Amino acid sequence: MNLGLQDKVAIVAASSKGLGKAVAKALAMEGAKLALCARGESTLFATAEEIRANTGVRVLAQTVDVRHAEQVSQFVERTRREFGGVDICVTNAGGPPAKTFAETTLEDWRAAVELNLMSCIHFAREVLPLMQKQRWGRFIAITSASVKQPIDRLILSNSIRSAVSGLIKSLANEYAQDNVLVNSVCPGYTLTDRLAQLSEKMAAAEGVEASAIQTRWADQIPLHRLGLPEEFASAVAFLASERASYITGASLAVDGGWIKGIY
Image (cartoon, rainbow, N blue to C red; front, side, top):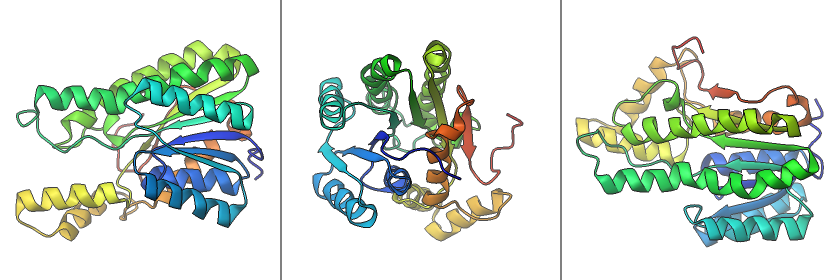
């Protein structure tokens, strides 16, 4: 299937590793031009060079702290100047720390809002007017399966990422008339560094090996395995494409069937 992404301009946030990197690679394989950002310079630039070498696409890379509106604005403006516009924006940010409600401080709450909600808002404020003007765009937020089925000890993710889901649905309604499609994608248990860190923390609390935690997760999934970043990225690439022209306001779970709810 031709996804129609050749020469589209795609911003992918937090794309130096993990799910963001997998999404960037998937879009590059379809011929999209990339604007990548992350906080870690060396890892980001290494990822950009890897994608250039493997796909031949143009890749812009800039260190950005997505919690700061002015840095996001400068990055989007640089992307617009160098590539002539922005067609696709995939928002992403590291997950907040694993804690129970009793362990969570007010500063933890504020930090999670800045990282996971406000970062998405910063990008939306910058790119949606550009997409609206050209009457074509794809705005996709990476959230978590926790927005559909809360996960124990992830009170911050359960709460703040659910706010992002509400934002995405609202934006989808507001911008549909401009042919700007807005969706979110909810990864389940996927083999990334973040998942490894989470399993290690939970294992330490329970006095078991991290592998035992990951096996427990896999046993809860109908496919009986953890997901691969490339599998998640394929779903995002489809939503970013011409082929997904009648999908907006969706919250797509890529979780191997882990979520037990009907919707």
